[in-house]
Image (cartoon, rainbow, N blue to C red; front, side):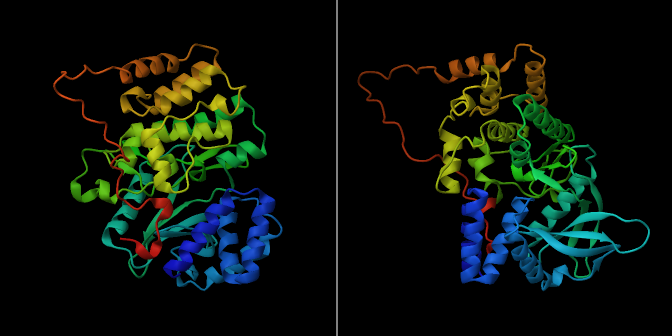
Length: 403
């Protein structure tokens, strides 16, 4: 796909995901009337974002799958797996629904294949994702089943195939009450805490990376930009994460991540706070007309407490969310386990620690510096945006510009 067409598709997709279902269908129908292929591609992306695609979108999805079937990647088998159809496509990889090609047993899986033409660093990042997943075994993390290398040398992963909804859609569709939402969210926090104990930082926690199965079990997905913190690994085994090469989703990036500073477990705690904010209010803490504008707010502006949007939310829940969204790392929960324990306290009717953390953080950030001497005029405060990382944000990344 040429760069201009890809940018138009991205714009249409980001517009579509913000629309109610009826308006979304009308958008797809309007685009399809003018450009059938573009409409089919848009329908496929929106359907991947919403597993319960409407009747109007189904034939368009079928058209999109036919287009994807022309892709050489989508033909044939990989090892013992037969590729059925593409179910997702990102900046560096395509995910296919696949099934066992032999008669040993029946199983459907998700096969993630790296795209052609990527540089050595992206390929190494893909290998690193496989290494990370191989070391994780948790009921709320999508399991790695297999992996291998294609005939042309490209690696692939075989994951368990999860049918379900993004966690925010699941909460809305099932009309979950506050306690039910917190219990569901706790399972995600436990998965993140488990990853942290294994020295893995996810770095891209967001609703689209948490699927909830038909049985109500959340599964954390996509460790594609995760970071290993294991000091025993050599420099050659780790993909560089210096600021200029960081990738992120602006709406869920911690202040330090947006500034291009070193990323630790605290960044995942912040992203968990953003996710919880959305599950409680059905809206993100910050919105803007561009990813950079949103990232700027995460660095410089304080979010409104969730109860601003839902006055029925108790102050303890407000405190838990705001403690996880503290700008300074030292003012946040020090681990995902600490956040989990505080939510457990709330559900048990016990006092939460977050309220005290917020008070201490506020005091720490309200210290007034001494006034300058009278003969030395105070320098004006520097204005303008903070030194945000110059990386191309993952959500705006054009596959044709991958580097």
